[in-house]
Image 1 (cartoon, rainbow, N blue to C red):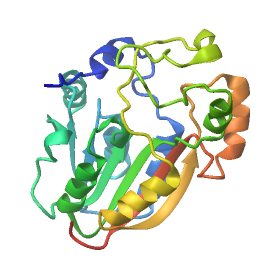
Image 2: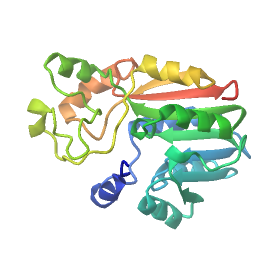
Image 3: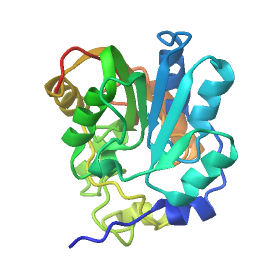
Image 4: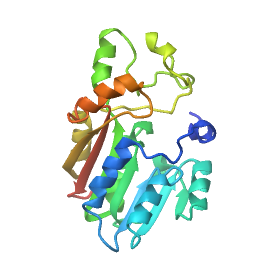
Length: 247
């Protein structure tokens, strides 16, 4: 039986930017800010240490805000911030009642799951009628991945090993500061993600591109910012969808 790895056991100890908001999260926040209403029920699936929930709570105090995450240590940190979160295995389901939430946010989670269809069906289930799902995820077809593939280099974000992300990295090995994987198992193109969301009972509302601010050298970030305006070529995808049918 496959042993489940908590990759954030390592990253919880070693990352220096635990509470830094990344570009993708800032974009997601802007999208959510346009739809969120007083009294809404908001769920963060894969809430981590609660930094995004904290942002929401500080800007929209009149909400019912809940979160769930697999990492026990991340959940503990979120609770210390006064947030209503619980530990749970998302791959086993989102442990909340049907039609409970107006908005579900899931940042950088779907790429970690063996069954992304199940995540989306669960998000659909816990959302109320006409509720919104906002998710972020890396883009397999990011502009630099298209170039890397031409040279036979493993695309960024797609990890072929559970032990080292240097496997298949070629000349990029000299630039990578960490070899520890983050646990990516499925990476999507924009078209694949759109198809998956539609199949799961959602209507696409907004699509935005985002830079990969924590993983690229500064000189490459200059180009990354240019491609941000073309989501199909951007480093990360931010998508807002609306529930249109039960799945």
